[in-house]
Amino acid sequence: MRLSTLLTLADSRLPIGGHVHSGGVEEAVTSGLVRDIVTLEAFLRRRIRTSGLVAGSIAAAVCAGLEPALADLEADARTPSPAARDASRAQGRGLLRLAKQVWSGPDWSRLGARPHLPVVCGTVGRAEDASPSETALVLVYTTMTGSATAAQRLLALDPADVASCTFRLAGLCDDTADLAAKALADLSDPLLDVLAQRHVERDRPLFVS
Image 1: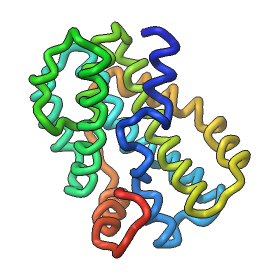
Image 2: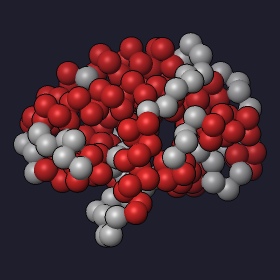
Image 3: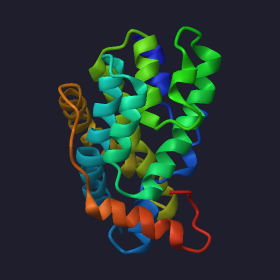
Image 4: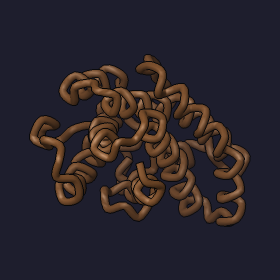
């Protein structure tokens, strides 16, 4: 994969709707679990090692040749929260819409109308001749930065502090992506599942998830 393509896929400005998803951090802020940069970093570490690892492993597997339909079922099985599944499919649909305009090679109809985000990301990685680890890294990295940016907005944190936090977690993102490329991760995080479900039951949240 060309470095510029990798950077573009990991850019928060990519028009797939990621900017309206907090990855559970809005509910974590509301619940008092994330209050400052210290608690944000702890939340991000947990999210990278769980949600990031699982999503990255599915994307890596698709990049390596796993059939999209089977990968979609694997994503469902590893996402117990219906709200989290909806968020993944919403962003997957956004990336699919963009991918159809950019990459003409793959048969995008095989992914269905609302595929999970990791399934689309893995298909894009395969179309770009990316390695499974590179493909996983895109999802692991954006798992971190999406929640970090949301927390910055919600708590009015110093952008430099948040950026420093993400730099500290860069090595963890690399290691998690490498681990994700080895095999499908088989785990979930009950806390993140609960936060996802609570979020959709709140009145007028700022973020969709």
